[in-house]
Length: 174
Image 1 (spheres, rainbow, N blue to C red):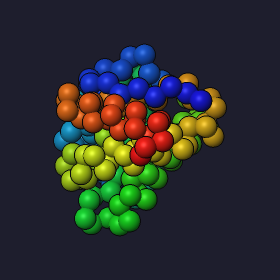
Image 2 (image 1 turned 30 degrees about the horizontal axis):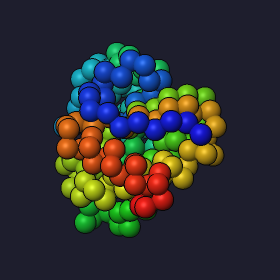
Image 3 (image 1 turned 60 degrees about the horizontal axis):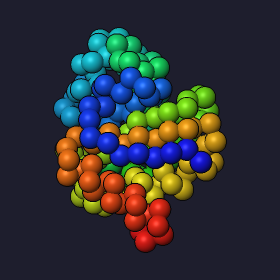
């Protein structure tokens, strides 16, 4: 099974990773947070390639080129808005599962995720981390081509939360 790591950083600057995941909006347009950072770094070609793929549903994953980003691809996932899109845990898990399965089909060997839905979409961070990491741990054995999964977190608190959650799940305590 591939390795999983949790680091603090900028998801738009993961040059050693094949594919980055965008915490997208339904229209796959530039937005705030991760979507804004990736679209700004990728340039206008990303928005042009996204346009015919929209709209997407919560839990869905679609793939594009990376344009000006230092990666080969961007996988766009629409996470659930907490308290509105239900069942939120199943929709959030679907984001990670569908992104990994799409990456496997595309021959992608490394993938970087943000904390999908944990920002503007209001998902409680600890619960979002548990769903994300549990889903990756469950899905990764079925994706033998994926060698590395990296969670790229915005700040030290989120990074520590993800590291603790991963350790707990790997030790069978989650």
